[in-house]
Image (cartoon, rainbow, N blue to C red; front, top):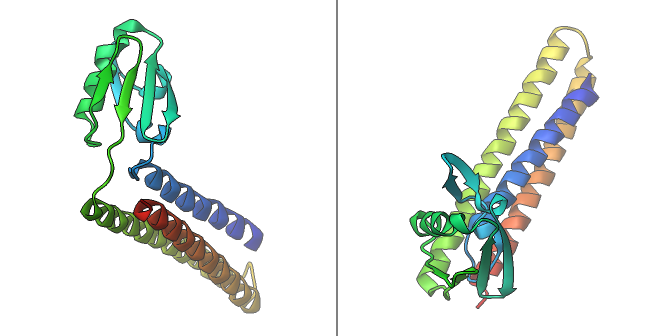
Length: 185
């Protein structure tokens, strides 16, 4: 019983960490990355379709993202979706490729991105604490229903706290790495 609760909690905490890393991937750092366009959907024949399902996305150099649609008819659709996205990027269409040049970030924008990264980290920590609370509630219920002893419940709660501390530390480490990446010129 206890091992099931801990395994489920660990899986949910991993999910929170994965979500944080996904959020970090959306933050523009002044360096080109294919993850910048992962979240952008194109209205392709009436269906919202991610860009990476319509084209090959590559990084020819550190400041450029190249998108090569497989269907020539998708060029204007992808171009429009990129312009309408909140990334503030303007693609250049040369007939074969869509090129997106990543401009240098200003100091002010870097600080703003660090604040956003810290907000994402805090949201993940809240999610971790919610998982911890759910796990502890489940353990208390098991103890109340006499399925586990009080000593087992206390030991399991200590394990839950250690697991929570570990994942909070991982979130902080990911945030520090992202902050360093953002502030790097």
